[in-house]
Image (tube, rainbow, N blue to C red; front, top):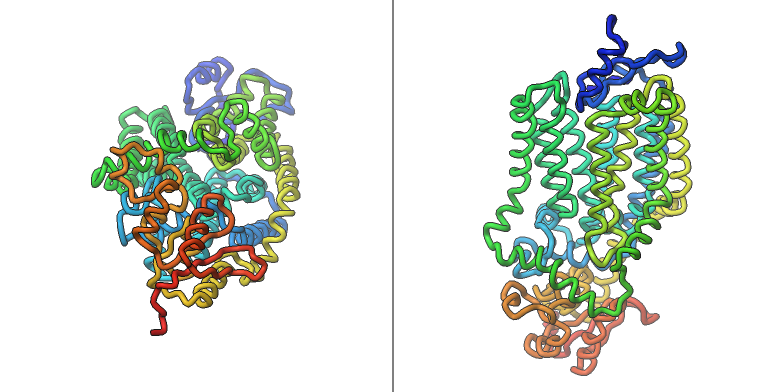
Length: 577
């Protein structure tokens, strides 16, 4: 554990401190050159494993209670915002495949194109609870993920003895991040779910590599959690090698054999354990797995976007502008400013060498490396969308926490003042989004899942449809909310349908789908009981045209002509007969 206030041992001179500072991961770094008395606070422990001695609680209890109240109100606002946020296109893939999990293969039958963890997780909840409110339960999972992410930050702050102001600032920077309280953190997709698992993995790694009480079990749990984070979104695969290298190099005070046995090996075993679902999916049907994951994103997706007229960001210059717009604004910029200030404070007080040694620790290096790698990985997908620029944000916030743990005693008051100021600004930036969420939370009838469920069930009743009816649609979540069954060809929404015309013949055997060019033939051959269009997707127009031209009865959900429209075949049996 690192200690920024541990007193210098008697007899340690300048020469000994300089010799120790040459070690990449020194177990302790004594104070360097003589300084004025006012600056004579001892240096921290170099690249060690966390704060050392107990840290006195300086925040008055009433202030902490009030701050927790602010965080609670902020979280409730986010919960209301999540529950009331309009349905997103991506949710048609994740929610539908999760709901159909157990009735077929998520790859060959339903067209899923990610690692299988989210369908297993959310599908398990659907199986356990048995609710027809599929969107509502998916959103509640996201609310839970937000709660776990904030709790994980508290665990890390407590473990590193950063002080309450640092935790408060980190929590506000997370919950006040405009990108995260936009679609990436509101929708029931795989964009936010990896974050709490990544935070918890770092927490357990900090516990496992404790200099005084190392724990191989904590390293094992960290490995499991890292695999789950990667299984939810493969973009976070960069976490695994950095954590593995950390267990080899930190702390160097222990023998290499001890580091490998108590750190690296348990982490690897935990990673393999957490990776079992993905390994089973690969082993059971490797051709379908790689066709739906790697080849979908490296072959089919690029071809589709090359032919698409939709606005897209593909060039490096365009991606940089988008990244600049996201990362240099609001809470992300505030977190970056906080990290810079926490590095500059000891440099200004102690100079370059001693200042760097004050903040130099393996947790800080790990968080900084993960944030930088998150920046690099954000530019890999093409075309770019805002959710692809999430990966560096959680590790930047984590870096702020860990840098505060290394803050010298003479800088702590200034550091806390800066962090609390940044938190207040982040709170103001998020107020216009979080505030209405409080109103939405108090009005369950306004929750998106409740509205859609009520609207679709009413639409099904007005059309005289039954739960036996199979519905052709590119908005399968709406069909599920209405109690309909969804053919496997449309379980992934539009994500497989729109690329199907670009599939090589040898690839088609791995997919259950139709395509824009084959839609009429498919509808002629299957004659679904109903056709459902959401009214928000251009690709849906051929569905509506077919329904009208083949005598389907039209039932709009709303009197003003907006919203979903259900077309019911007149040949469908009457459910009352």
